[in-house]
Structures are given as C-alpha cells and as structure tokens.
Length: 99
Image (cartoon, rainbow, N blue to C red; front, side, top):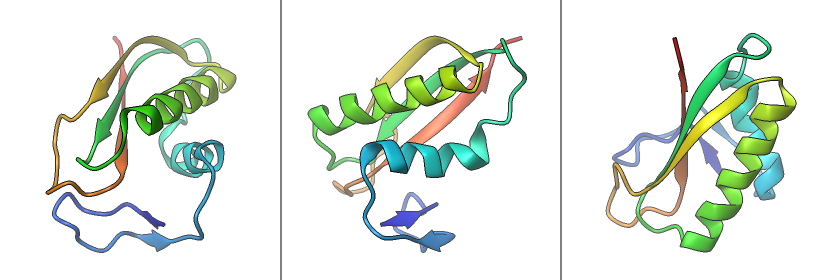
C-alpha cells in the first residue's frame, strides 16, 4: 500500500503493509485531521478509478467515524470518481473546513 501516490501514479511519500479500511483511514487522517473541536467540515472521498462502490462506502464510513471521533462535525460527504487515473485502485480524502 502506498500513501500519498500522485494522480498519475507518481511515487507516494511512504510505503506501508496492506491495512484494513479502519487502519488506512487512521493513517491518512493523522496528517489531515488537526482541526478544532466542533469545527464543521465537508469530506470528499475520491475513487481513483478502480475501487468498487462497496469499498468506497466502507472507506467513507470509516473516515466519517474517525473525523467525528476527533470532535469534527461532518456536515456533508461527497463520494465518487471526481479525478481518476486509468482505473487505478485507490482513493483520496479531501477535508474542507467550513467558514
């Protein structure tokens, strides 16, 4: 598993052993979720092209649970294939702070 892979398959920042969805979300949000308690956010989960809808649903659920456990309020989620890379298997998270 590669963390931080570029959209065109560029090398990521770190290679890891294959992780469960829960572990994957925890690893990714260690870097992303440093918000203030009670802060409202929008979560975008992008399918890189080759990830099944079932896997996307599981990852979205894990991400929402993790963000909420950190005290963030997830106002909305967007899950889909917004920016793909030739059916690459994987996903990306984007967290947007609301004003």
